[in-house]
Structures are given as C-alpha cells and as structure tokens.
Image 1 (tube, one colour):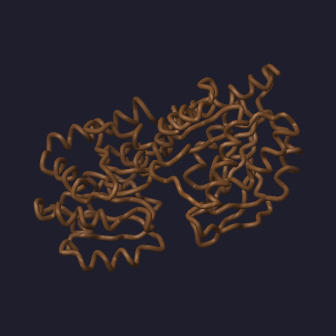
Image 2 (cartoon, rainbow, N blue to C red):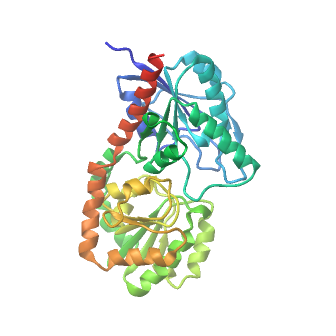
Length: 389
C-alpha cells in the first residue's frame, strides 16, 4: 500500500464554508491531513465553524491583529513552527495573502526542513492595487513567498493570469475555482420545496419577480448601486421585488438608504439566514452582486439561478459566461445593472434558458469535484517534486 502524503494546512480559521472541502480532502485515503488554524476574531467574519467534524485540526494560541488599512484580520500563532515540526508534513498547503504573518512562520519552517509549500491564493484582485509603505511591503513579502513556493494554487483563471504576468513557471500553476459544496445543494433544494410557497406568501411575493441578493452587508459590496438599479427596474417592471438576504455592520445604514428610495415599498431585508437559505434562493429569479462576493455565485447557479455580477474574487469570470448563465457588468454602474436585470425579467424564455444553463455550469464545468481535483493536483505535484530531490 503506497504511503499516504502528510499534508499540513495552515489557515486563519476554519470557516463554515471552507469546512466541506477540508472534509473531502481529509476523507481521501491518499492523504493524512491536519489543519492548523487560529482562534476566532470576535465581531468579524473571521470565525471558525461552530462544529468542526471530519477534519483533523489543531486550534493554536492566537495573537490577533485587526487591520485598519483595508487588509484582512491577521492572526499570529507563535507555536505554529513547533506544531509543524511535531506533525512533520510532506507538503504544506498555505492560505495565501490573507494569512501573511503566519505564512512567515510557515516559510521559516519550510525553508529549514525543505518542505514544499502550495501557496493557495486569489492572486491580485482587479482594481485592488493599493499604495503606501505597508502595502508595498505586503506585496514584496507575498511575491517572495510565491517565488519560493513549490506550487501556486489559484482560486480562478484570473489568478493564473497573475501568475503568468509575474513569470512563474507554468508547470507549478494550478487552478481550483472556488465553489460551495455543490453536492449538498440538491438535497437542500428538495428539503426546501415545501417551504417556498409559504415563504413567498409571508413575504408578499406571490405575484412578484424577485431580484435576489445573498451575502454580507458591508460597505465594500456597494449595495446602494443595487438599490439604485432596482429603482430603474421597478419603473419598467412594477411587479418586481428586491429581496436582500444577509446581515452585517452596514445593514442599518442600508435600510436608511432604502427608506429614501422611491422603490422602498418593494425592497425587503430579512437579515442573516444560514439554515434554510435554499428556500430564499428558490424565490429568486436572478441573483445580483453589485460588487465583490464569490461563493454566492456558485450557490445561486447550483440552485438554477442566473447571476449578474461585477468584480468579485475572480471566480465570477470562470463561473459566469456572459449571456449564457448570467452577465458581467462594470462596477459602479447601476444603469448597466438595471439593463441586464430587465433583459431577463422582460424575457421569460431567455430567463428559463439561463436557469437551465446555470445548472449545467455547475454540473459540467465547476463544482466541488473539480475544486477538490485542482487542490489535489497541486498537492501531488509538490509532493512528487519534493520526492525527486
């Protein structure tokens, strides 16, 4: 029996939406895996799943650094090097840019022990280059880590473009398009089938076409653009309704903005929904993301909902084929959003075709199996490269 590859995963926290892919990787008999992660950042989205099952893991003592410069929350786990030394991995799968401080420790260990690192990264977000000394240092350190990684694992084709622009060897580049656990959605849809009718009635949507948003309510999402776009939509399609599902520190401000809109009577905000969110997806005719957001795209497509998006995390360019299962529009243009929404709501045949295409995108191109396959390809490449030395 071949020896299992021992994989150490270094991550800020084990988010509930990342848990399924870790569970699948841990269940693969080819790997012996452990996730080394930090503690929660209270009051932020950087928190561990409430129940972590099926994943060998070790939560480390954590010093927390909260950024005030638009960078992520950074943990420092001082015992990380010691934990890696105890585990003795064959390969380290490291969360990329977002875990910079711990990655310094990870690369210290990797350099001392000649352990290959798979650097799992977004690459560079479109329009997100920032100036300033801290950001320049951040980019230089990140670039060094990319150069010294055995493999680069990108969340999207945009990440591969970034790798190419920086001249990294093609053979060390891998893609794993970031999606939700797409296999879990059909059972959720079946379970939600009886809930959709009563929910539609309770929200007074019985005769409405529903424009849906699902995600965190934060300023970076540009939710005002969606409200402004919906004003235009409602003038042309009076039977339309904007349903906003999600919570966040900006929700009260958003509600104040909605109250001033001429379309306020047909805008609902229902707060955070985790269990039972499939019923809300099934209410939607189209999902609209005015800025950022990533996993909501694959979740909507897996429910058979076409998606209109602007800049997200790069995955939108893989998951949305313009005019096939949704549309990509420039950020900051509510009129363009409205035009694309109306093109679907005013054409039932086109909307039905795109709903079918949304399901096909998940079934045939990007799903949890292709996602896991990309991760395993990168790990296996790094392990073989290490064995050859």
